[in-house]
Image (cartoon, rainbow, N blue to C red; front, side, top):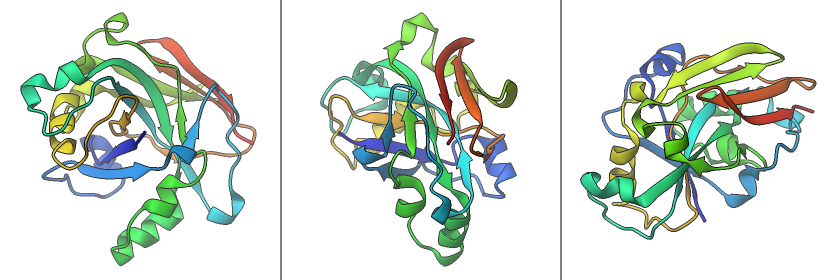
Length: 203
C-alpha cells in the first residue's frame, strides 16, 4: 500500500510557511513503515532536530484505478479519517533551500500517525469537513476541506495519472495553518466534525 501526501494545499498554511501557491498538486510519498496506528505514542527522534505536527484529513482508497476522470473520482473512496504528518522542519527547510527531495524529513518511521476510518456520510460532504487539533487541551489547528486549493476528487484524478491507486492506499490531503513543534509530554487530540478520532502522547 502507498501513503500519498499533498503539500501546500491550504492558502493560509502556504502564507505561514512563506510558500507560493502551487499551480498543480505537490505530491510526495511516505513508506508504510511511517504509519503510526491505534493511538500509540510518537517518540521524538532527537537527532532530526525540530519535529512539527501537521493535521490532515486522510482518505482511504477502496477501488483499483488508473487515469481516473475527476467526475468519477468519488467512486474510489468511501471512508475518511485523520492523520498527522510529522515533519522534521529544519531538515525540510534545508532540503527546500537546496532543491533536494523531502523523503527523509517526511518519511521517517512513525511520521504518519493515522486514526481509524469511518464512512464519509457519517460526517457529511468530503468537500466541507471541519477538523481540528488540540495539544494539551488548547486548539492549535483548525481547518475545513472547503478551503483546499485542490479538492479530493481533483487530487485523485491528478495522482492517478502517475500512480495506479490500489485498495488500502491512503491519501493525506494537506494541512491548514497553525503547524508547530511537538515536545515530549504533549497530548494530541484530533477531531473531525467534533468527533474525537485521535488521542495520543508525545514521548
